[in-house]
Length: 319
Ligand SMILES: Cc1ncc(COP(=O)(O)O)c(C=O)c1O
Image (cartoon, rainbow, N blue to C red; front, side):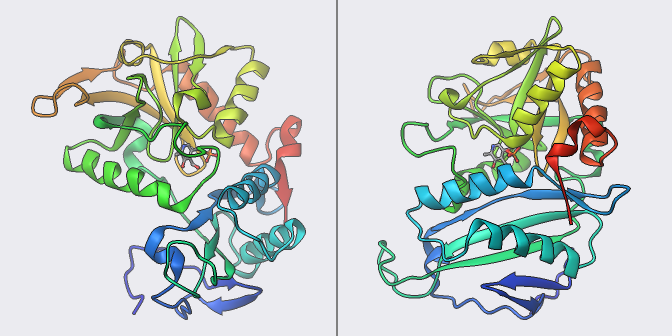
């Protein structure tokens, strides 16, 4: 049944306290979370280091995972320690040296009314090798499509939580961007300023200053974003947290996406359909190549996640 080779399968996944073979799937089709996206999840990466695989910023991911569960009003039948141990076990059992780790809490089988009165909360954790999120050529820089549809607004749903159902907007718009010939989408917020990508935060560089927006611009404030703000100031770069207008974005010296899955990817070309979907305008950001500050941060991040910079050991959890 699970015979596609598009998914880089691992050996086993963890479900409610037990390991199962990857192809042995146990979830009922009438599961609440499957119908309404009543789930919360995390995306975490582990990297190879000289001391074996290390999970990057595991504590911060677990904090956000439990916060998301609270927003979704879930009673989680697993403690923080149990979840952390299970995540480490999943990477170990699969003998992965680098991994993308996906814990998911969801309202399971019980009833299908919108209110999951009789649905227990289940936890599943998978981990597998997942390479470059936007494809192998993304290191050269990507083309983004500025959508006519605006990002969900921070006043409508708590965007600090990773709520499964919220991602339908990311999926639809990610598909739309690719249909329009771009590599990824960019959302404007209801105010018409830059918000974020479907699963990525955005930074720009202007006159040597690294600028990113915050939660009041309708974004998930990512863990990579906050790591990069720290790394940038340690490198002596000036940073600023401020709204980013579409014009600032188009006229930036550099722009890039960041996130656990995407890591750091330069944005070099833009198709802007935000004003007129029928005749989108095309732009090149600065020279059309990844800029020097983007590359510097990328190199620093690459070393830090692989345990090559002792100053950031505190961000790594070894197995
Ligand atoms: C909507 C959205 N924005 C930003 C990010 C980046 O967050 P992080 O760096 O914590 O992965 C993600 C990924 O989790 C996301 O889904």
